[in-house]
Image (cartoon, rainbow, N blue to C red; front, side):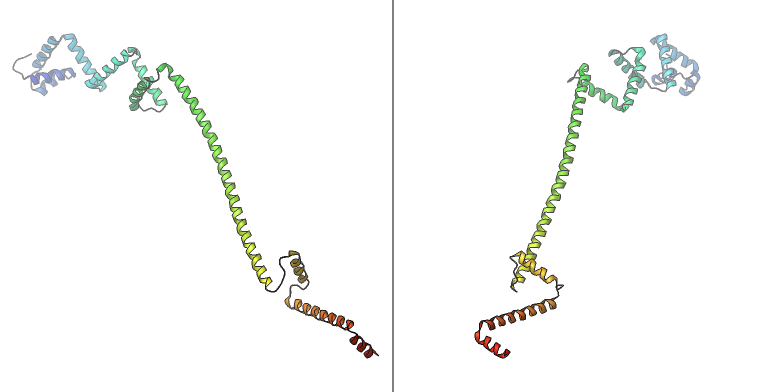
Length: 261
């Protein structure tokens, strides 16, 4: 390389040349002559190897056109190496990646989760070998179906129990209400009995009480009518008693006949 130029200037010239920059632009940007740029580049190519240097420049130009960096290129190289190592052929790399992506997309796996899921799958394979995973999945699916059936039966039982509970609550409420009605009726009867006993009205013999009430019915349950009828009956009873006493007493009979005579 030409003497007298700083090392960092020479490095910038080589870097810009690898990027595909024109020689005159490189010279103007670094404040050197076009010949100096050519000499720096040729010296570097000779030391590295003309073929290797030109390939690097072609690679750098291509990367710049497609918009990738050297770091991204290195990452792609490592991924390619891994793929080749696990058995993916070089000409099938793109189709393999697209197939994995599309399958994951169809089942709702986001690209950023693919690697973590693969890691989980690899960890799971330590417990269940890959060859037995389909059988394992079938067993778990059968268990799931049985559990769903059991859940359905439990739901039906719960519904039946709820219905029985509702019926029991209704019966309980009915019994409680009947009990309240019965208590109310008993109190009502007790109060009537106490009140009627004050007046000597029989209530122990229901048939007599019913006859009494039925007898009052013909008087339309009118108090005045009942009292008048009672007084009339009492007068008749007294008259009947008087007549009986008269017939049984001879003196009264004589006087009676005498009066008639």
